[in-house]
Length: 298
Image (cartoon, rainbow, N blue to C red; front, side, top):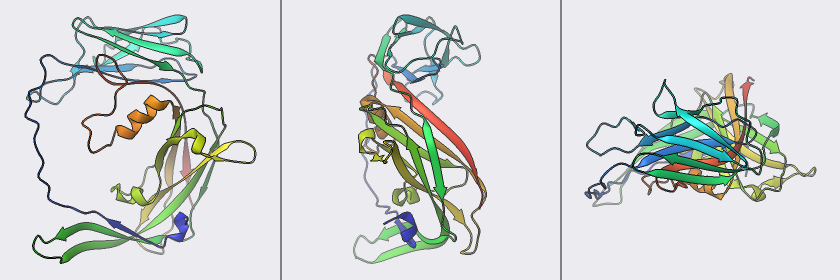
């Protein structure tokens, strides 16, 4: 069943009172370094964010890495040194901003040395991914969507009280095509319109983003790979035209560690995503990313 075959979308959000336990254990002494780096194939090495955790009683603003922290990235037979950004102490930037791009298959090793700790992370740069084609289609008229905002369940009965509202959406179908580089890795796709439902509930029934093993993508006759997703654009009436809007399409290729990180970012049972950093927290990944922005009008 395609998105256009669904004439009514019923979205249900169940709100059930829960008793949550609190973690009263004291945090360990000292702080933990947190690093976030996305190294992109065929691009110069980027700026890298480095911070330190703080006690729960402190303000929530991030804490910069300790003074004297040194950062460098080894890439095959060369090493790129970093310096702290004078504009923002949370960021380190390459001393040589024109450093040569990372190539597919290059091994990278990130090293951070601070007065009280050190961090290591490594990986291999994936093949470059490039969007070959983006096809977009939408129905002539919007469809009805029934949005159920809450569901109250009586503790001593089976009576249900439901508050629902009806709206209209255009489900816009997008097809992405890219080359198969025989890479045993993962793909993340994202459709990011500038006008979409504020609630993420409808995304459960549509498919504006996905993380999947690349070998599971649809193979076309010419050997290229294809993914199809759907996002929603809300309108006020069944006669409303599709509003003019802008759509950003993103495709990203990475390895198993990349997949574990991106699929654990929103996991409700985790306090932080899966890390691939030794000696600290965060993620250092070699990825290949391509994106395009498209203006859409009916």
